[in-house]
Image 1 (cartoon, rainbow, N blue to C red):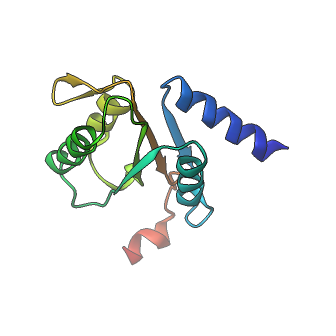
Image 2: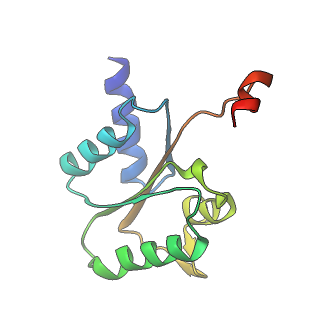
Length: 130
């Protein structure tokens, strides 16, 4: 029942254009859940895997492409996978919360969902391994 309520909550947030950020350990099924939701809710899915070397320009280019390829009546789900893997949090805040990209409002038919892993404090011996 708990998982069903969580899925319904995500579905309602997507329906009304509210921010959705999923947090969970690696391998717990965040990406699979997003793919499932996009299929069952009839969204066209665009996925960008975030990594340490990605730039703000690459993220903006990806989002602009998703916007340009969608029609005004087509439901689109833009998925930023592992947003905490890069140093672009200010840009993600602008996109996810403010719904602005390159000084333009993101169209209403574009929904955004992101995921991240929980923050972990490293202990002394773990820092030596890095």
